[in-house]
Image 1 (tube, rainbow, N blue to C red):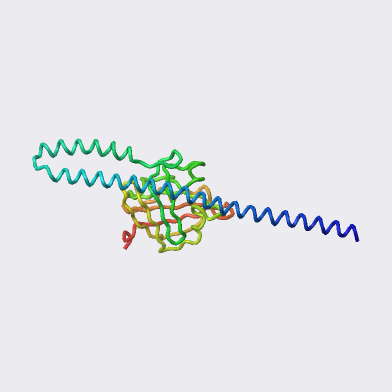
Image 2 (image 1 turned 90 degrees about the vertical axis):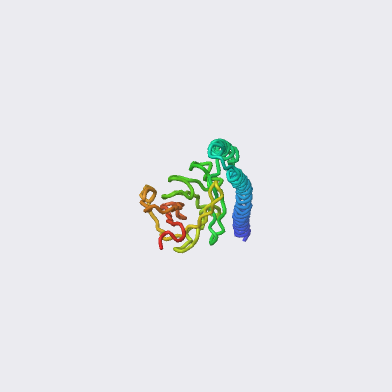
Length: 230
């Protein structure tokens, strides 16, 4: 009886340790998710400030141009404004942990709201989503954006829940927000990159990539600018 009691006690201890370990993991994952989202939101706030300054400077330049009637004065002013605008835009770029923020991505259905960073590498994909290929956000052609599929629900973890007709909103560094409509979703292997260079027939499109839950394949989503395929 004593031997049985010892075995039962050991079993209960192991069970309790296992339960505490699992609970601890989920608590950590939840707090980590909140920390990631809070930092990402702070980066988005800084990005929005930078785009507002660019818009304001461009508006002031336009107003100043309209006040000049002399062609010579206007030409000189345009040249000056062009140089000033380039320097201003360069100075007003927003960064997130050392990486330039090219824009933001929002997916209303899955509550996604993250900065889109300048390039894909190990670090950028740990803190946000990033551009992997293409002409750039809201440019004509296909721009590919990568994001991780984490168990804590961050980044592109819920892309598997998206369907044709769902919306993706992309805001670029000029402050323009373009709505894209999902029209194709499929899985492919890790070596397939044919979707990157597809012909968009002059449309503005995006491709979203993330891994499947078992990490054996990739989920690819195609979306085109709203109204461009009608």
